Amino acid sequence: MSESPDRTPLPRTFFDRPVLEVAPDLLGRTLVRTSPEGPMELRLTEVEAYAGEIDPGSHAFRGRTARNAVMFGPPGHAYVYFTYGMWHCLNLVCGPEGRASGVLLRAGEILEGADRARPRRRSARSDRELAKGPARLATALDVKLSLNGTDACAGPGAPLSLLTGTPPAPGLVRSGPRTGVGGDGAPHPWRFWIDGDPTVSPYRPHTPRKRPLDSDRPTA
DNA sequence: CAGTCGATTCACT
DNA sequence: GTGAATCGACTGA
Image (cartoon, rainbow, N blue to C red; front, side, top):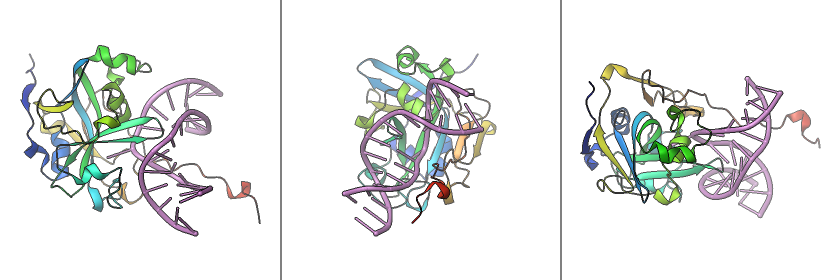
């Protein structure tokens, strides 16, 4: 018999800590996405930490902009961004206000509401792929820019909230380089996941955009 | 103001 | 394994 997940809400103080403490501690927690359709629940299995202005991999590295403003605000709020012209990704703001750190929610296991996720994730070949990747997770849970800045500590019933869930045994938590992050931010082992969980996304190194060959460029 | 590229995913070879 | 999709934010001139 396995224990049922603890349904105690995570308080804002949970997020008001250094991001490298919060990120691994989010594994096994229950993310609740409430919409007019009803609640969906997901067990977090993979996350990445982004350390704000000191982190070359972070959207906040070059300071505050219109897009990343939420990261500079209070902890416990959702930072949602739009990327590659078609995807959304969901983060939770951490640390002291102004530190601009956050945790990217990369993957999880849908515990409740899979029936509502499947139509949004037609390419998923099995339920374990519904939220296997950050944009897939956001798509499955219907997370869009309209949720940017939402308070995830406003209590159950809010569009986003977190419950205590069932944290993994400490020995099952793994860490490694962040997926798709290049440059000076690449070496940091700030991706955390639950070892052996089938919903964790595959690691992929940073892929620089293809540039035109010099030989194909017009010569002067 | 034009150029570049992204904390990705999917279809195809 | 490779390349396309697709657009807004950001950068630098």
